[in-house]
Image (cartoon, rainbow, N blue to C red; front, side):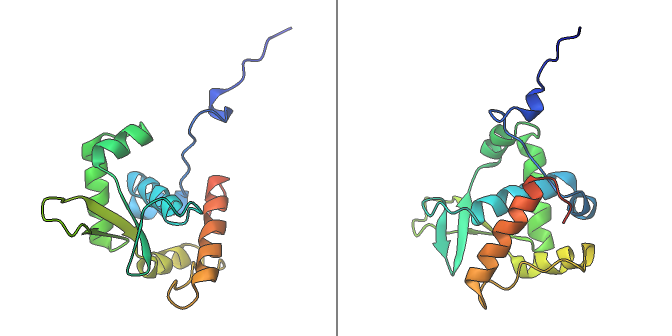
Length: 155
């Protein structure tokens, strides 16, 4: 009789990272993973995370910290991916501190830019919506999208 060894990949104590294959094929694997991670933070119910600015939740992280959290990409790879996402307009970045000595870079998602890509990848699915027009609906849609992506369901 053989003894089954439980897989660590299914171990809830380990961090599981999920990305949409459709999104990864269109923006890159690292970019899709970072966009997913930022989306998770932006739509988190924990109001203590991040900072509200101009009606959007913003987060900061250094490339080194993202590298430590994700554990699969170097800080340089993450820096290139963030730059790509900024150039695509999917990720907005800004220095939000009023103090000139604090050059911390904060990030958020521009869903107005991401929505058309998501719709083009799967036109049958509803868009995340315009947060300015319907913030409650947009938050619920974003949370639903997050749950689907966490389950590995293609969006």
